[in-house]
Amino acid sequence: MFFETVQAGEETYLDWLLAGLGWTLAVALSAWVIALLVGALMGTLRTVPNQGAVAVGNLWVELFRNIPLLVQLFLWFFVVPELLPREWSLWIKQEMPAKEFITATLALGLFTSARIAEQVRAGIQSLPRGQKAAALALGLTLPQAYRHVILPMALRIVIPPLTSEFMNVFKNSAVAYAIGVFDLTFVSRQMVEESGQVIESLLAATVLYFLCAFLANRGMAFIEKRTRVPGFIATAK
Amino acid sequence: MLANFDWSVIPVSLPFLWQGLLFSLELTLVAMGGGIILGTLLALARLSNSRLLAAPAAIYVDTMRSIPLLMVILWFFFLIPIFTGQPLGAERSALITFTAFEAAYYSEIMRAGIQSVSRGQVHASQALGLTYRQTMAHIVLPQAFRNMLPVLLTQTIILFQDTSLVYAIGAKDLLKAAEISGRNYNRPVEMYIFVALIYFTLSFSLSMLVRRLNKQIAIIR
Image (cartoon, rainbow over all chains, first blue to last red; front, side, top):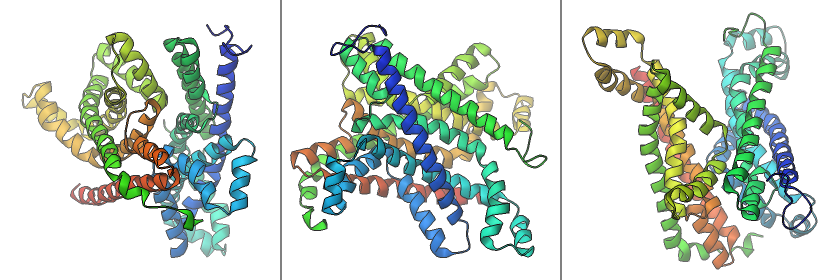
């Protein structure tokens, strides 16, 4: 059935699926970039000797971890534009290009950033205290100690737990369909409605999701191998 | 901005939201109970010496864990009627889906729990003449369950948040109820903020509870 054309146009179902895969990849990968940057920042904030910074980091994590992703998505899509000044909210509603895609990416990225922040904090705290003490004793400032000693170690330690987060990003990106992103979930539902072929439609999308998760897993395993600190982190597996 | 909000929509829709919340909680509890029981069986199957049991359990768990919950919800919703020949209704379909899906996640937790019990205990109970069933029921599973209680509860918090995804098949959970009354009173913004608060309050207090439990268990061990 994948080479048949859809009722309303000249595209085939395969074209739909590929477009859906493209949007799923676009949402998941851009969200991952946001999540890594914000997550690393928030995770680091939670370990610095400054109560204000720790409080900000903690608040961030609790806020994004305790509200369901779908609800967060609706908050960004329906609620946030209403809270902005009038001109901005009009611009978002009427002129913003790729509004659904940007909203979904932002929501998924920030949601995931809270989970990454938690991993990064655990990674930094798992380092022997002596490393930070030694860096400071050598005369490095605190930012320098983080930049040259603590973060390079901690970020490598957290790669294994980040692997499952990376796979989660692809799975979680499925909620983007709810605000109208033409992703794999959206496509599979559309195919069910157009063709009535339930099993083929769902199977095609499921296999593609499966493939994404699998490739994400392999990709992270490769990075893990390349960035391993020789003789330090348990090389046994 | 804030002056434009009309919070009077909240009290009038409370009874309706309450119904939705009850379904969300029912779904969470049923999926937790069923999921832990099924998950424990899956974990036992996966750890058993018989490949005939271990392989299918492993395939089931790994498949469920690598596809989005949203797709699983759609699968069950469209497939169950094909097998049973009659429509099932979104709510019952959701109950079955979540139990089957969460079983895979709980089973991985229980597997880690079972493996956390030292081998010596299993050997000792075998030496005492206990059967496999007795060993599991009286020695291994109680300890596995206890060691993993905080993780099982954390998974339940995730499960509670994930129940909002039944939105996709139109089951009337808390989120759907909020959406419907938001539309009826033309006040979606207030409704979404309010349900976000409910979800946050419930998840956050439960996670505080887990944190306390974690400390207590850590001391005893």
